[in-house]
Length: 182
Image (cartoon, rainbow, N blue to C red; front, side, top):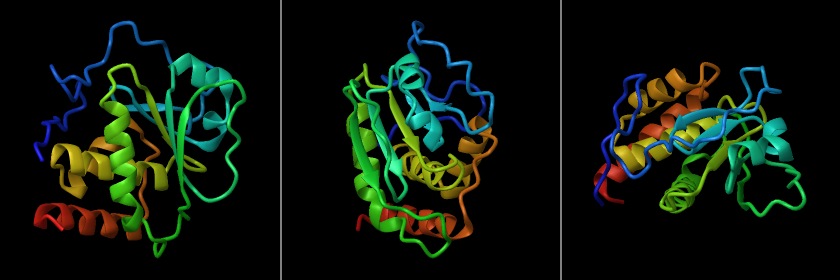
């Protein structure tokens, strides 16, 4: 599989990639002053908390077309919005099984972002550990980042990002499995 290049600087990560940010991007909604509001990690890929993921006006303002929920429990889908959704039943515990879900989660993100009009939201309860771990896994799979590079990059875009130590270890296992082709 051909991996794309993504810079780890705090500047635009993609350059001339097909995922480059469109100049007509809608502004971030203002009613979310908390750090857990939406954060754009790479163009068209956002991380947030559950509150934002269940907010119809916020989702419409960002033009969200796909949502990946990285948590157990009920997630209220705002009625009337046609959003492609998937949910992975993750708990925010170091021994929770993240690695088993990463191939399917990264495949969902890859497929969604292959559409240049898609805008994808990954969320968990607080937008701190589970959702950011899934996005780190995507950066590892798509751009060849090491887990440390992926975490550093996500933290540069979302200050509250803090994958738990068990997830960090599982991101390393995922990276190793991708490198070995298994």
